[in-house]
Length: 194
Ligand SMILES: CC(C)(COP(=O)(O)OP(=O)(O)OC[C@H]1O[C@@H](n2cnc3c(N)ncnc32)[C@H](O)[C@@H]1OP(=O)(O)O)[C@@H](O)C(=O)NCCC(=O)NCCS
Image (cartoon, rainbow, N blue to C red; front, side, top):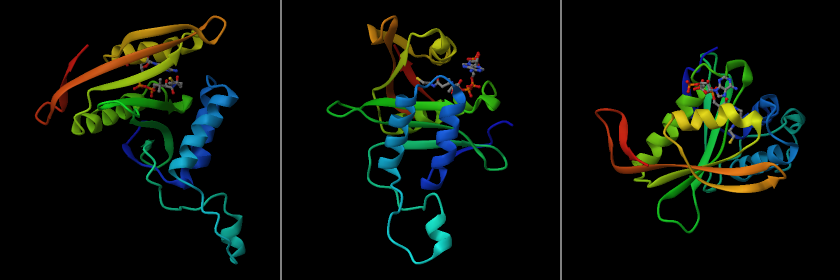
């Protein structure tokens, strides 16, 4: 089922986020835990005591998002099922450099354009903020080869590599895409330089 829209997330989406991360089968348990920590920091679950048993049994409530600097975007099917998400934010202590912390699409819909829609929306928002650069880090492991190709085809270039950073034989590969100028509303794209 193709992605119909990109939209905001809330605490209620936590279980779907966890399911998507697990279903991709590329993330280690610790990576999934970190991804969910970022989510919880942004959308804290409402732990206020309640006398309503039905509410108390709910896995999570929609407490308002915090002023966390992480931004989450979801990819939704026409039936409004969450099938992918991206998380990005400003890199602390930099001048308009941003990090893409996470992007994941449910394997059942990978290859149908959801990841591209998410990246396009992240970049559109960054260009609106006059961002200079988006940094994406990934692994050199073979199972990430399609992911690296995905970034490269969208204009991300390898800027650095830390050999064996994650583990023996598993490099940290750092891709960047540079933005310049004001977002061009007539083409829907900003000018990009590497
Ligand atoms: C990378 C990812 C987000 C792309 O999302 P997607 O919805 O499959 O992306 P799209 O359909 O817009 O584009 C797919 C493109 O990526 C390639 N691709 C990458 N991974 C793919 C996969 N697992 N299945 C199908 N195509 C994949 C396709 O060949 C296609 O190529 P194109 O550039 O010629 O169009 C998604 O594959 C994913 O969640 N991968 C696992 C998690 C991951 O690696 N996240 C990044 C961590 S750094």
